[in-house]
Image (cartoon, rainbow, N blue to C red; front, side):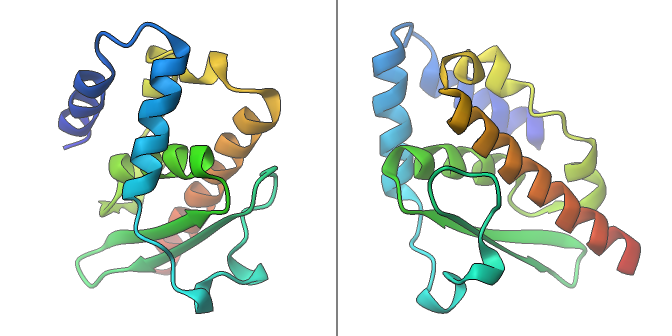
Length: 139
């Protein structure tokens, strides 16, 4: 499933060699991300380490898969969040914990992000992995 999702992303980014084109595509991804309900846009769900505000909510489903919701106050960051959620939506804790997120390097996204955005992306991923570990240990 992850390989299929990665292939889909690679297909969308194929031929976009210019960073500005990739930037615009990420903004489009951000526009597609469903808005998070206001009751989840609280300090409890803030991802620490992000320059922009990013909220992350997870819910363990009865089948052991984790459903994620997230939002950001910055459209470009919303695009990054949308990309991450597309990759990991409804994976099990083990699947998420074992995933390396190498696609960001493959697409030259990490190399072209500002240091603060790269740190924010890493903070989001680490928060997801921490939540997945909690679900794994409590199941």
